[in-house]
Image (cartoon, rainbow, N blue to C red; front, side, top):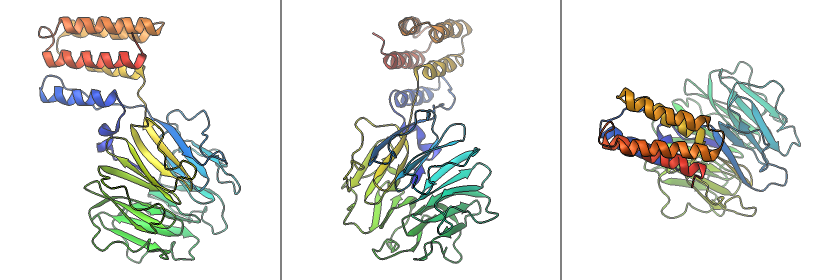
Length: 398
């Protein structure tokens, strides 16, 4: 089950130095000295950990620029920047055998033994186990905005706020409650289903042997949901997490957990993504699925498989950072200083080696410092100098 952070929250979830860039941008904007465009980012890099016996934590090498992820029981799914899908892990029922020619994908979801892909035209493609027709979307299904996959059932959220379900219905997990509307998010557990309504309430149906569909009566103001094997999760607007169902494993959330914007649940472990781009994990850790890789930050999307975890984190390359700084310079008012500084950054981009790029960035810093309070405002100069210094750190300049 996968949830991406809303666009309005992305700025607080970037890795250094980009968070530093944005903080300084805000300071400068408050000073009313320089108007900058919205930040641009590289697509994400994938990190996978936990059980990997079937290769579900060993992504292929051609995943640069991933935009979305999904995790099945023992397999993983990634949407590339070009809209194609990479799948890896267990393939006993063809769940990682992506249909030939599949393109235009914007989201993916992994079930027990099947996979789903949502295309930009609002249609859904499925593959893998079809014992219960869970990988075969209903004929004519369109206008879909989100998908979710349980162990052997599937869900689709339509643009009109209604939900469509298909596949195994032994516990009623594929029988959408009559009249359900106004839905903005969905989640599928192994044998139960969740829907988040626009009013912040949660509706649950399906297997309730462990209370996973017994939504707490006072639960409201929910912004995100997730469903695992025998439990359900919700994020409140205040950033706290509520969990119900079987809590023997993964146990209740850690004390003091707050500022959460997204959650994901595996068979017996949980993930929570905080607004600063860091992760918190808890529960069964038999294969390290609940042990966050050291130094992981800037995370924008998470997914939890049966016993493994996935995360996307944004990557800003030095070249991108220099180009963004040059764009900032192009918005300076003075033609002379604008052109002088731009030349240095263009030279840094064209430099034949890293040391030469470092030298040009240092020249840029010297010139900006020399014009501080002159052709450049003090806040303007400090901002540009700080960005150039951060880029030098990224390059490893001495």
